[in-house]
Structures are given as C-alpha cells and as structure tokens.
Amino acid sequence: MPAHEFYDDDGEHTREQCPRCGDTFLGDYGDRLHCGKCSYTEWQ
Image 1 (cartoon, rainbow, N blue to C red):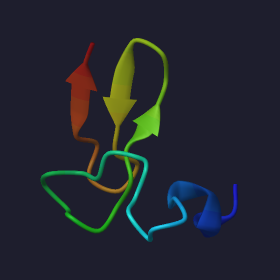
Image 2: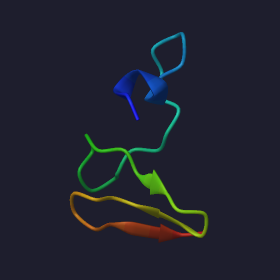
Image 3: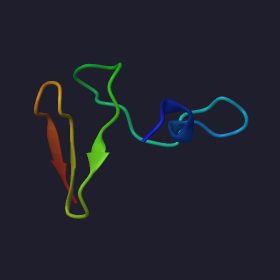
C-alpha cells in the first residue's frame, strides 16, 4: 500500500501511529492493531 494512502487531503494521517515507535503506522488486523517494527499490540 503506498504511503500517500495513509494521509487525507489535509495532510493528516488516517491510521493510528505506534505510541512506542512514534513513526510507524499500526497494521489493522480486525481484532488488533499491531506494529511490525516493535511488536506493540492493541487488542480491540
């Protein structure tokens, strides 16, 4: 997925960023949000 799809027309990001890394988007896997860089996981 191209990086420009993570931002709206105003330049704001549309995906949640990792609170631990700060510069990585969290992957949405339905039941959880996961950071591939540091393995941070938020269960939903």
